Image (cartoon, rainbow, N blue to C red):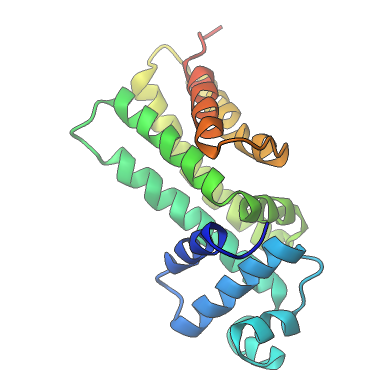
Length: 207
């Protein structure tokens, strides 16, 4: 996958959503994300990121403690977008809970497939982060997941809290293996199949 065309536009949209970062930090994050996608995280150095962002390697350290800190910032951006996107759907009170659940799954599947290479890197590197950062990010992921659980329980009052958690984890967990399989074909078709399977997991009969 190259940085040209749609991929660069997707990364720009992804990084541009980070309102807490200043312009220079956003440029560094954008170019780091591009290089992580093109070369892989392990093969990308701080000097590479600095050169791509138009600054010296050491100048990157004025904004981030190192490459791992850049990765953490990108993971935080991912969680921020997942949270905001989900809450935008959850607060659409003109829709029924069932309609909101369908819209939430559609949004999540589209977001993951639009940023699939970067999502694989972010999720793949999460286990290698320092324990404190990893635990904090997992807690943030749990907050997003609990919002899904709350909505599902409105749609499926027959489910227990545990059953709803398992259904949500199962549905959300489908995304990464599908991306990693690199099935090819029309992304819209993959998205529709993924959406249908996620909905099926949410609607599976309670035991």
